[in-house]
Length: 143
Image 1 (cartoon, rainbow, N blue to C red):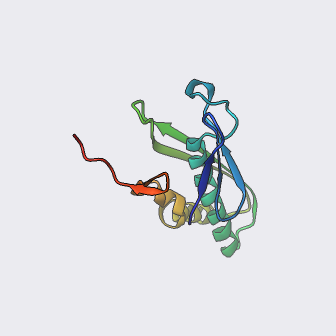
Image 2 (cartoon, rainbow, N blue to C red):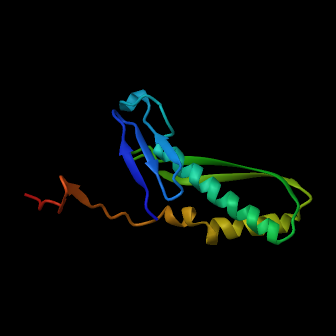
């Protein structure tokens, strides 16, 4: 999967992935932005709730559990030190319907621990590459 983010000035970016839908990202004024879009870290939690929500609804449908409504709240707990990474996520599932408690828990556990690629990716290795003026540029050796 490939996503492309284009700089729109100051701290604003517009990203598009394979679906073709644009996503605006921006920083707040404290970081030189204009709050003209979602923050990138906010989108991590948005992606997590969407991924888990899609999976949970699929599993409940397969289990023939009559879901009336589902709301997922993700509270990200960030470290105090830079880079202020999310170190924990509390996920609160507000569920309505005539569901078996064991079935909803089964679906939630399967998605959070096994099936959701966003949850699994939160520990991914990141390998940067720099293409400067069309030429791949290696990391300079330390002086």
